[in-house]
Length: 148
Image (tube, rainbow, N blue to C red):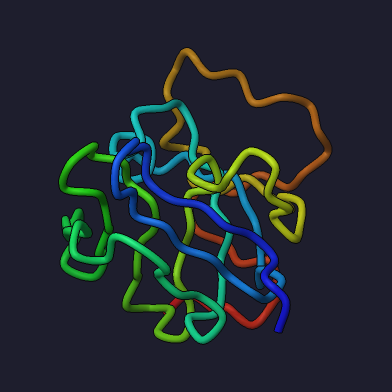
């Protein structure tokens, strides 16, 4: 299968590198406090990718885990602190990739189709009038990933 996208941490020496080879099941804007606090931004841009299409290609020994909830397992680089992806127990066959950790020339494979956790958005953020659905909490896109 052809590689669709590559990404990794921000280390100059021995960076963590990953890739995926399938179109994401979905892409969305997330405003939950777990994602925004962890990435240090007002929103998180997330691609949901099948685990079978994802692999670490370098620096795996540098990856550490931080559980923001008992069911949410975030992976980051122990050296630069870059939060790259996470596993959520409710989606056992998928992982969620923080799109800004993809190489800037990477093709994500899909466009965002909704905003989730808008009730948690930072008060200084104004969601643009982009025509995408807005959900107060989690809502799937109707693709294979389902909330538990």
